Amino acid sequence: MLYNDKILKSLDIALNYYNNSVVALTNKDKKTLENHFWHILSEIEYTLFILSLMFDKEQYERYLPKPKEMDKNNLSINKLLNEAKNSITNNNIFEAYKNIYMARYHTIRIYDIIRRKQNAKEENLS
Image (cartoon, rainbow, N blue to C red; front, side, top):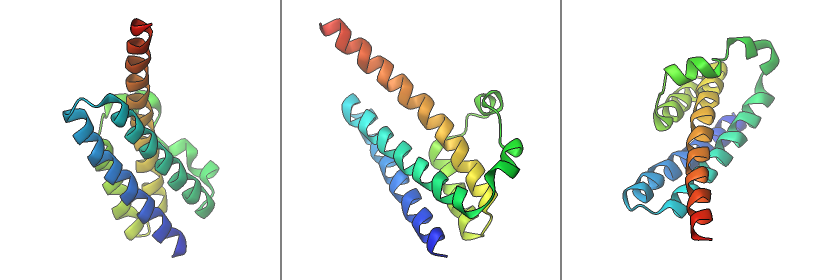
């Protein structure tokens, strides 16, 4: 149960950063947006690590969606994280892991896009 509390807290933090990233995007504050996505990714990695301590993830890896499947199913990060919270509450560890795993994939993709745009902007200023 101790792990569940840590996971739920971390997911809440990630969701809070996600909500703040929407505000940063609306305000066109790219540096803050990048920072928020870095924090989201950090919390996601932490939760995946804790979840991996709770079950034998190698046994279930074949059931995780592949990148091509995730590209077709472009679910929102906050939806995936909220579903993961529900799964943790219902003690469905693998389903939570799967949702967080997919959220990680989408977060990395968005973070990479933000970084590329930021680097291109910095190069144009040089």
